[in-house]
Image 1: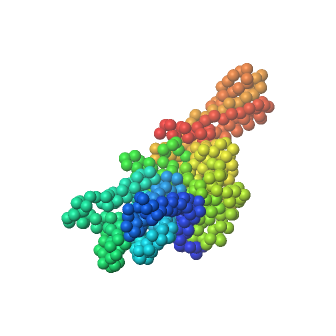
Image 2 (image 1 turned 90 degrees about the vertical axis):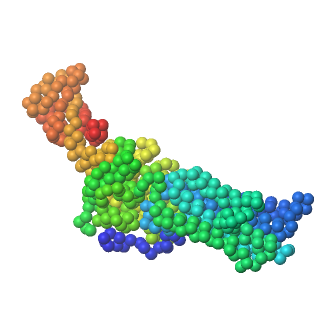
Image 3 (image 1 turned 135 degrees about the vertical axis):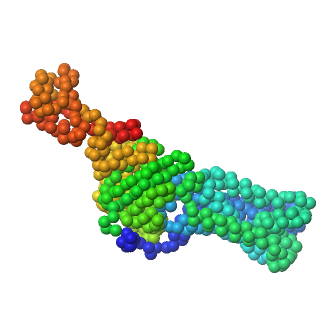
Length: 268
Length: 316
């Protein structure tokens, strides 16, 4: 047995680093990374321009303008991660390139981890792009630093959650279309509680729903800090939902990644 | 380890739902052999390759690859190279980048991986296209790139699943020549799944024919043809004026022959099924030549792998 693998090269980089390197190059040099960032920056530019300069249309108080821009930056940045993660495995499957990856001795989790990191890089880039907008709007009312820091924390949690969720769906989906559809449908469902009338948000069930939904509770937390001027520790209970959801999604994605197969519809 | 066959499988089974894809495969392939894996569409060839390369798990049975049991899939993956059927290629990477990436996945440091990529690109005739995006490659170039990828880990066993699929006749010929060159240079064991039976006759030491997941024939090409017991016939063309003389000579040599088209001087030889067709034909032709009857043409029918393939797969 030892003779069979004797002399085989084993001194290279860890497989997850190799995969991460490749995925990052694919995403940012030849893939969708830069076009997505361009669209993201355009969206933030329009949003911040309207809330900051258009006096005829702008009826928002300055802190509300910061909060709105911050929430758009976090939500859309996290959405980009979902798009990247949902395509990661099912896209390889659909393009016929997954089999050659599975033929390597790299652990399945290392392959998926590389893809997860590449998807998360979309959030990192999005956040870097959004800092000037948030800072510019927030520094005049003294919340620029808080907005940037809290946005980073909440956005990173939501990005991790959506990366885990997107990879989970992508690993199990037979087609890229199915993966993207299921992922986006779930994202819409997560946004739904933020649109509920205030009467539906009352009572124990309404409160539980708001706190259990990672998106709603995360964005509420940002609002508490930016709009109401609370300290970061004062409303930290609103982060329980995002933390638990992130742990569950990442844990499930890691568990499923270890059993990554060519054709998830067939028992293999 | 040294005495182990390159591949050994016993009782391998795989079903997809109620449909058996592979049903009790027994196989033993010696190192350095080129095995032709044949069968009609849906016979189970790709499933066999995917089981033996650890992409899918068999429902029953076991196999070893270079002595490594199936319970050690990571070690097996270090020992095999695979060109998958309908393999996809990353359109946004160059051939060299893609090969370097895969070589690194097998644990090679980047400089070593890049050197391996360049060496393999040269071996498959893509040295001058290594820096071109894969999206600019023709179908044949992509297949050659796929073969190069199958070799990045210096495998002991290479599986080529329909490497000529979608290629024009020239591309098919080039692919077979490439495969023969790789066998010579790397000394690997090759399992070749293909529908090109003429190339299998030319390139393969042994043949295994599957039909509906079962092995219906296994052995050398000659053994498979013989075991198919197809009625074999030879058509000999002699000068029309010597047709009668030729029939007398053949009768004297105990060869079952009958007159064909008299105007064209054709004779039909009915060759015995229990003797290799080449041997029986040589005996008949030799007797004619010894008797001074010139042989203007000879065609052997029913003695080719194609005939055996049709016989064992249509009848099964």
